[in-house]
Image (tube, rainbow, N blue to C red; front, side):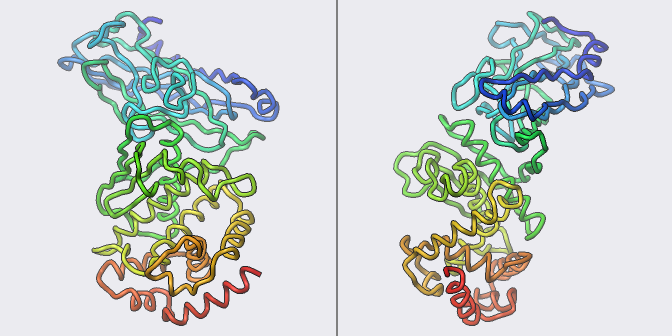
Length: 432
């Protein structure tokens, strides 16, 4: 495909270019679900020209897609060569590509929306898992416009998916207009739109190691985004400085996930991440539970930013019960799990645990007492069963140096001992 004049690009971008087509096995879905495309996004009125060296300016794109699960469509994006050097196809250091970029999936990282079949990306004909398309003409000169095309395949799980893209001259440099992204809504099988998946929070940056799959990257991003949105909407408090989420293939780490005020880590080959105990045919999917795990760790980071010192110190049951409650509520709100299923799961695990009083979980967390489930019950059903702004109030007080028992009484309106008595009575009723 050759370069296009400005008028031709505008016409093509504004046209509906979505060509949804089923991938193998999706004909049943298409019988009740219809894909569509939104209006094209036109180019800006003015773009720079003649900048020394390699440069690019975004020049419009086809509309955002609403796709049925498993279907494919062709996306297009136009870039104006705003530099003084031409782009030469097939020549290292001169050929222009579209590459994956931040935030999701990240620079040079695989995407669940397309790829070459490696690193967990679907085989949609991209040049590589991290290169969406190569320049469509043999030569794209200064002040000319190139129209890049690439195929996207909708994942099976409904939701909102995003694909950050940025142009580059392979072997030379990344080019400008690095805020461009693609958004794909994967519809429910009946064709209805799912609840919109929120975009990720500001101040969160990702460090993705070699060998991490596209699905793992997406699940971490999704979990962080859902938990952060829930906190913003119903709990309050924000991150006060940038944090880093590290996602990597580990060696012999004892735990899959670990957080502090500076960020958290996910070890994607750890057994708890690969086969999360809460996931199963009677509960919810492994991807949903992995997103919950990522959300849980993000809440720990949030805890570390409340007040001056954070509230990661204190009774373990409360430090862990908060993220269990908040992260699962985020998943419930967004429809990834059902309330009745969560209730049945938590009841089974609380009833089958070795009994110890909740106060014993202030300083120890033995596995056989199913401490995460008991802590969830304490926070979600007894301490903050409704709005959860009091959790932030408690964290801020502790973070500003107030002893935790005093902060507890101030934030929740009862003493710790009174709460323990009330909780134990509730637990007896819950497990019946």
